[in-house]
Amino acid sequence: MNEKELWTRIKSKIERGGAWLSWALALITAAGLFVLTEVCNYNTKLAQMSGKNILMNGAILFFVLLTVYVMTDRWWVSIGFCGILFTLLGIINIYSMLFRSTPISARDLFNARSAMNVLGSYDIAWNKRVGFAVCAGVGFCLLAFISFLAERKRKFTWKRWAVRLVCGAAAIGAFFWWGCLSPHAIKPANLSTLRYEEGYQVYGFMQVSVEIFQKAAYKVAKPAGYTWEQVAELEKRLAGQKRGQESDEGPDCLWKNGAKELNGQTPDIILIINESWYDLTLVADLTTDVEVMPYIHNMENTLQGYIVGPMISGGTNLSEYEALTGNSLQLMQGITPFNSLNMEGAMSMVSCLKEQGYETAVMHPETRSTYNRIIAYPAMGFDSYYFIDDFEEWDYWEQRTEYVTDASCFRNMLKVYDAMEDGPRFFYNLTTQNHGDYVHNNFQKSTVHVQEDLGEEWLGYRANEYLSCVNLTDQAFKELTEELAKRERPVLVCMLGDHGPAFLEDVAHRELAQEEMNMRLHSTPYVIWANYDLGETELPKFMGLPYVPSVLLKLSGAELTPYYQYMAEEMLPQVPVLTAYAQYGDKDGEFYVYGEESPYEELLNAYFYMEYNTLTGKGGQAEGLFHLEER
Image (cartoon, rainbow, N blue to C red; front, side):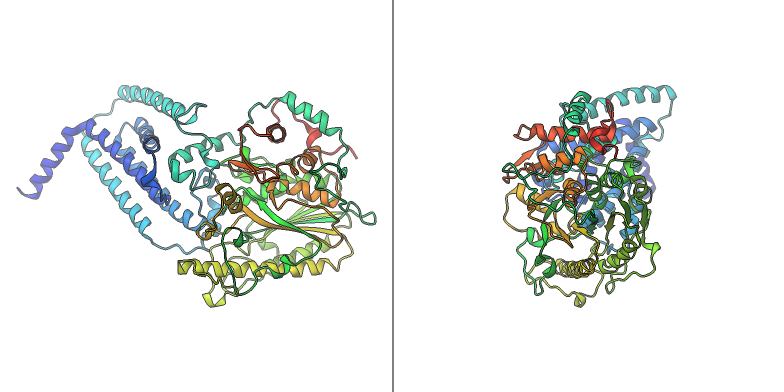
């Protein structure tokens, strides 16, 4: 038998398989896509995944295939399209996990431009997983070709297509509703708020991704039990309280003899969110040949601790949204705020200070298009905004020419700050110096070196370059505070990190309880300093990022809206660890799960009701909670 006869016989057998063969190939494709997505997502627990979760992930992928099929009436189109699509997504996810330790999600669809702006700073190299994904993609194309041969003699009719479309749509809708979206769905709830190891690795990439897409579609989730009447009652109670009132009564009081006014002047406020600023000793027992932050750790007249943010690594825009507004992303899973929310006139620390006569400015030494900041910043009410092309004098450290040093960023900030009007000033500065990846400099250029063996040579090089960057941050903050100490104007400065470096979980080896480790992975340092006496105020060692506006307003002696006053005086003393993931922590170090019974259920419900109201205005807008009285 020659090759032509053999090929003719194979085609004949495939054609006789017809529709049944195509359905079988679709099932094989769904199984292959499941393996592909998990391998590309670095799932090290795939062999331990339960049968139920394996079937649910496979079923989701099959119904995605079915969706394309009912629209095109051809399995070969569905297999080919989905095979190529998931192969490309898988390769992207491989690099997402390498660079950010975070899988791709719905929010990344809105951040493609932002991702491209930083992609050049990473070392994109071929690895075995990419090779596996490419081979899988070729395999899916082969399955699509076999399906094409099985279907090529089947004629298309509008009647048959319409019947399959209706029946298929009903089956797809029923599956996704009962399997994933209904209150009693087969898929467990709140998977997207779990850590990567708890969510993606246990329940699978597709189950978590479906939930993220679902939450992204709704933008703001309605808190259980929310009614306009409850918000109106809160407005009546809280708006009647004296704003900014100091109290030293009660065992939970944090605000003791805080500075309120200095010779009739209200202090200026400078908020610095420092890119990837993290203290690795939180999660790893590391020593270095040079102290990493000698100045900050030995400063006087400061409040220091750790801020619990929404992400372990990546997601800067999420952190700055929580820090500027006080709104927790617990209600907004899966979105990127500046891309998804209307920031025009939104309630924030900016709006609160502008109502008190503050001039406001923001600086970010990056392109203005990243995360839609050129739209979001003026919409929030910043009077002036500065990006990388607004200044000519920027400095860089050695070969890290993608990211401006903190020192030059602070120097340019002071130029703008000193030129502002004589009234009170609020300046927000988002830095870039410590952004990953950490393979830019020759390894001999690192000034800080980890003394322990981290197991992988590449990890040691990255850790050394990263810690050298953090050391530069320490020096830059020293220069900034020494310069501000010379000013006659009182000024309050807060610097905090947005998230940890991408390799953070690779070095997190301390023996800690799961809840404690999760909190620490989400926690970055904060330091609050002033060129005047801060008094005897005490703040929690670990504090949720949404508390930043209320804390800074309180420390500066500015007026607080009822919303911020509720956070500072009622919530913070009792539930300091307010998070955007599954658990929150109280003052005694106990952890609780959102939505379950706890001693703080009523306290948190009130906060989330107010947040939902300011974001949506459902039932009516409680303006008295989010704005100051007429002055």
